[in-house]
Image (cartoon, rainbow, N blue to C red; front, top):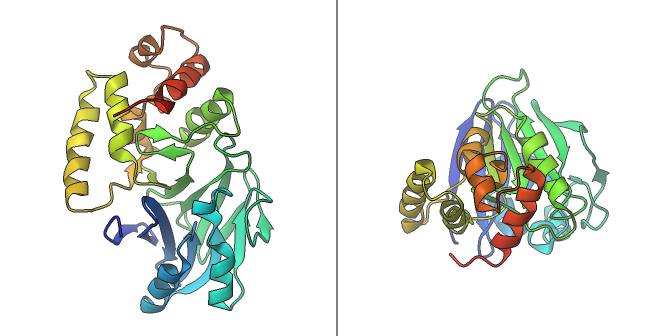
Length: 271
């Protein structure tokens, strides 16, 4: 495994970080009261089932962020191995085993936990982020961002435009409470933060996070989660309104133009 298995305790829920493939993350979202669970992007279903059985959880739902094989490629196998009914959520008909198609502002529950769907097309046209909060709305909550928002970065614009990524990052995800924990789809933090430092060499928060992440990765510990507030302080793609970032990207004051230029530069950036 590329990282150690780790549990994160939040208000009303437990998030189990499950590493997969070369640098992917799957997540088990557990309602601490009922022990009902949902899994995000179960590309390696054997590890998911092993963890569910060891922890004596009731797995009821699959939350798919997007159709790419390293996120959705385990859905059908999970259903086959699990042999019980599972609701498979997602926003794209290309997702395997999909039986609950969702769109912006759709809601459902995991035990007593509340889930709200955020449509974030760009990396793929059907990308969904899942915002999970305790039943009474207390606590920090968590958002599962797939390949839309990474720690210090964002996904490539395979099927979308700078306008769409701006809407996803700077309108929808930025509107979540700053304390919201961000669980992204890949362990890309050091690569992303290297680019963030290139964009804003004088931003001390970036340098501090790089040092922290280096220590974490030296012992194979995951660097997730961050928070929405932290991303606003160091992620260049969420800082396209900042003069320092706009200056780096050529001086245009339009944040959408800045977004497009940053992504184009990042596509060929060598850390």
